[in-house]
Length: 90
Image (cartoon, rainbow, N blue to C red):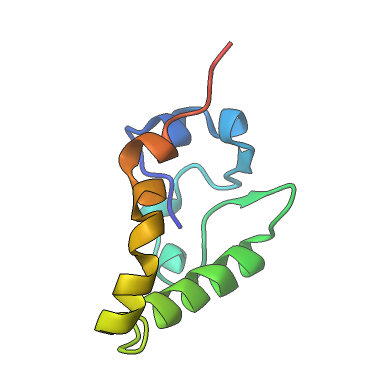
């Protein structure tokens, strides 16, 4: 998970509840293996574990099976871009 320079998440991580300890993370290579941020609820290690889990579960052949995709069809609207809109900024 990398809040990218040029995005609002990178410019104002506190609005999103994130801490980016090294604002120049992109100049090194540690970001290839570990998240570059954390929150009050998730350490960078926990974020990495969830990213790994999502990757392995969502990219598995079982997850992409026609039966699973049919079962998920009722919730695909929740995955739309508007559902992931930016938080309100005061």
